[in-house]
Image 1 (cartoon, rainbow, N blue to C red):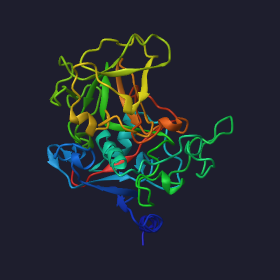
Image 2 (image 1 turned 135 degrees about the vertical axis):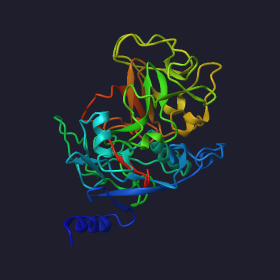
Image 3 (image 1 turned 90 degrees about the horizontal axis):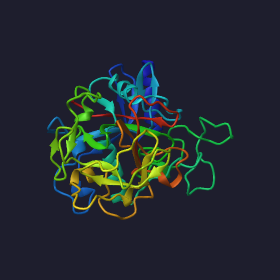
Image 4 (image 1 turned 90 degrees about the vertical axis):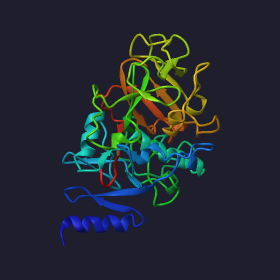
Length: 359
């Protein structure tokens, strides 16, 4: 028996309720299957449409597979493995390339895919905890995960993938997806802002490596208030806009959804910062269902775990989700940040791969 087969057997024994999927070199990752569902299944009053994460290049797919663990990189490829220090200090394009290098169907987890998990968790009253308070959840009093990175003050920062308690799993069971709340932020594909304008790749087209997510790609589309996708720069598209002049210092400011940029930042220091469930739209601006389905705007103003949403409306900004080891109650499945350029590489940002057969 090949060593690769022995590794697969060992992972299957460790994660018996999960799928062990091999890349095109025969190397395994532990994955969690998410079957297709409709928007109304996760959003009260939502439409009968299939959630966009299950549509790639106009074709519905029956399932997606999400990495059970935040990924590591071995020989330029991303892997979902337990007990590892997650890969960090990788920029958006490096993370994407490490996922796509695994072969057809593999890709950087997209924002659409992240949204399926976040919305499912809330609908089922299963908001996962995680490493958001230096090795433990903000609601916990003891350290329960295995440290992999300790700062100069002796505080636990990153912890080993999957080493926290079952409450850190998205479904509250050992079969779930770990560390969606804290540990390290995760780059996600298919969503960015350019000078505040919200841009996406349609549906889950970002899962197909042939659909470029480069800065100049023609695949990016902006969103009108009625949900129509149009060319970036079209008048009246949806944008993140401050509610007042944000100033010029490194400080969080309130912001809202708008169709014009009334208060653009004049430098890269200020940022928008507020709880996800408090996001609002400017007077007269309609919020389309697509933003709610992508977990970019709350479907209602109820509790979303205290998770925070961040943005900058100057230049191109790529998205990363989930929060980090220091964000306390602001971390979680609805936490989203869009403050860094695609070239940014930081010890608090990692990623995870996903897989869709047949694309």
